[in-house]
Image (cartoon, rainbow, N blue to C red):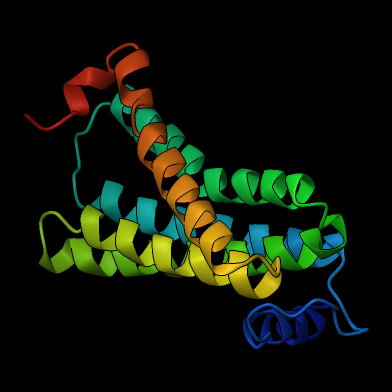
Length: 178
């Protein structure tokens, strides 16, 4: 099944921009499950490393970070599912979610690597997210250039606003750097 997932992922990443028809070997929701599972493993590894680097951190702070990180990682998938529904491209939804989950996992790893060297790599990570969101909307969903730019902006804005969860979670405002 993993080999099949890798073939579907290769297919999703190699689609030319604006393609109107999917190749016959398109993704299934089992492939989406594998992609989300890989995203969860990457999320667990990066958060586990970050938590291990700061021993003595309160449990509630760790839980808040896990919650906000999980919401920020799932947000692009939800936005792309909505975009596929609105653009009447539900036939492309599994392939879109496979590509989006791969890109989000890749961005998590890139953000983790940036955070080791740069103290504020969030802007760079959001820029990378915008680029890959544009590619997913343009290549996999087959949207036009303007709609793809709008979709990328929507994904980035939704991910940025998911960070506002820190303001509504009791005790979360203490985690916001001043």
